[in-house]
Amino acid sequence: MAAAEIFTDHFKKLVTHMKNYVDLTTEELCLIEEHFQVASFKKKDMVLTKGQVCRHTAFVTRGSFRTFIVDEQGNEHISRFALEDWWLGDLMSFIDQSPATLNIQALEESVVVRISFEHLEELYFKAPVMERFFRLAYQRSLAHLLVQKSELITESAEERYEKFLNTYPSIGQRVPQYMIASYLGMTPVSLSNIRKKRSPVRPS
Image (cartoon, rainbow, N blue to C red; front, top):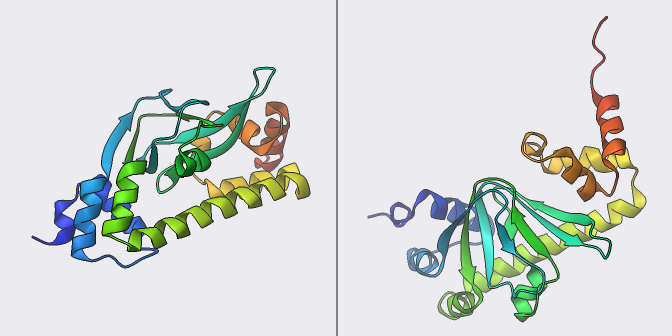
C-alpha cells in the first residue's frame, strides 16, 4: 500500500502542507500518523482559555477559529483568524508549557489535526526533519504577526482591509463583520463605511 493511502483526508491535507517545506520519507509519514490525532470542534467551542496551558499545536483542515484577548473593560480584541491550512495555538504557551495569554474559539464546525507537546518532542527524536518543519512554520507565524502589528501603525484602515481580503479571501461570508473590525483595529461603523466605498454604485 502506498504511504499516502494510509492517511485519512485530514491527514493527507496535513502531509500536503508539510511537503511544501520538507521532503518526507515513507517511515516519516507513518510516524506523523502515529503522533498526530484528529479533533473536531462545534461552533463556539473554546479550544483554549487564558490561564490554561496550551497542550497541542494544531493544523486546521476544515472550519475557522479566532484568537483573541479580553481587556480589563471586558472588550474582546481579535489578534488572528485561522482557517484551512493555518496552524492554531498559543505559541509561547505551547513552547514553554506555561499559562496561555490568549483565548481560542471555533467560529464554525471545525476539524484540526493536532499533536501534543509530549508527542512532538518524541517525534523530533524519531524524525528530526520535523524540527526543521516546525522551525519554518513558527518563523512564518511570527513573521505574519510582526507584519500585522506594523500594518496597524503604518497603514490606513482602507489599506489594512484590502490586505485582509487578500490574506483571507473567503472569510467575509464566514465571520461576522464586527469580528473582522476587531481584527483590523477599527470600529464596526468604520468597517461598514469602507465596505460601502468599495461596493459598486448601482444604476438608478
